[in-house]
Amino acid sequence: MIRAPHSAEVTAVIPTTGRVSLKAAVQSVLRQSVEVIPLVVLDDPSAQNQVCHTLRGLKYHLISIPGGCGAAAARNLGAAAAGTEYVAFLDDDDQWVAQKTERRLAQLRENLAAHGDSIVSARILLVGETSKVVPESLYGPGTDISSYVLDRSTLRLRRCFMQSSSLLCRRRTALQVPWNEKLARHQDWDWLVALQRHGVHIAQLLDVLVRVFQHSPDSVSNTPNWQASVAWLQTLPPTVTTRARGDFITSIVARGAFESGSLVRGAQELLRGVAAGAHPAAAVVGLTGFVRYGRYRRG
Picture 1 (cartoon, rainbow, N blue to C red):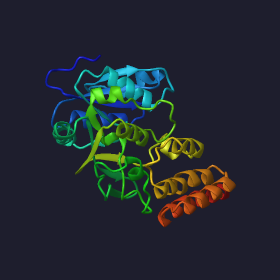
Picture 2: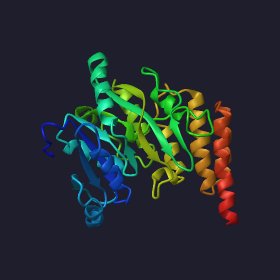
Picture 3: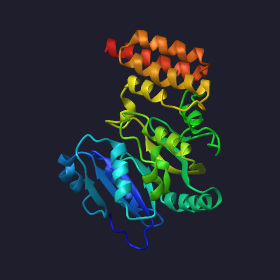
Picture 4: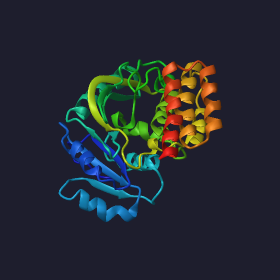
């Protein structure tokens, strides 16, 4: 366990394979208005010298694990190693605004007193070709979290959104409900579902406290592993609405199948999602996979 100074109550667990964006992520932790311990969990020991060079001059802790274990394993190890009462998670290509920890910690303490075991999130600035604040519709505590995150009622990710870099909880919560290390995709959504199954109260702040950079190099979300998405969908509880399942099938599974060149399977999944009542926007998103495949073939 990492010994933290008495003044620090939060550890930021940052999984990485050594991407250059890591420096900006760690700097955003060090700029917090309350003291936070940056804990970098390196999932590629061969990149340790590179990481140390990238982070030279910064105060942080570093743990290396066998390469290829994945972000979920890195987060679990980071939570186990943290020496603070609370842990937060930050992807190595995202950044926090300076008041993020202070504001969410205050809300978490209120929720712990009112509801028992809790986790808090916040709204996010998605940074890409254009920037947008998400979600437009805050998550309502007590509703099914899987139906919320699977919703795709708009063409762009605007209405419903919750992501790993916005999450803060007690260290004990993260140890009792670990991240699923077997998943190749949808790890943050899966963890939220698992937390709700264990009776953890989930809340989302109106404040925009995190910057998430879209289409980062080597991002798992950029790879069309639609088979892993199908497998994950089958693990979800029956409380997930039929329409939410349809949105996921059309916008994630069908799109991924199209992009990978599995055109027949993509068409089958698209029709299956539409039959389940998917929003028209989700169907359009699914069809973009076919368009991208066509452009790739022509290129």
